[in-house]
Length: 62
Image 1 (cartoon, one colour):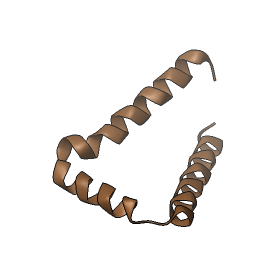
Image 2: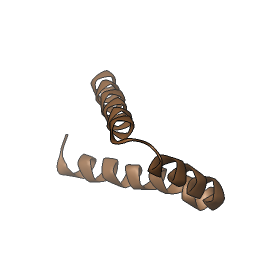
Image 3: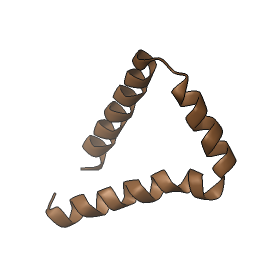
Image 4: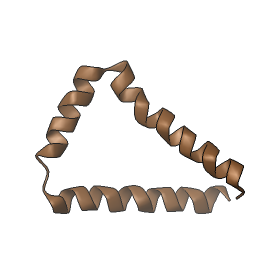
């Protein structure tokens, strides 16, 4: 993976992350409020799950 691919991947992450707040701000706000109610352990588990899924996708796609 060269530097250009890395920047393209980061740009794609920003596009995907921006979809929900752009398309439905009220739903995004409710989801964010619910996330604030989660414990640290729940947030860590969600982060770990996201990383594992991302790593598996990278492994499958490369």
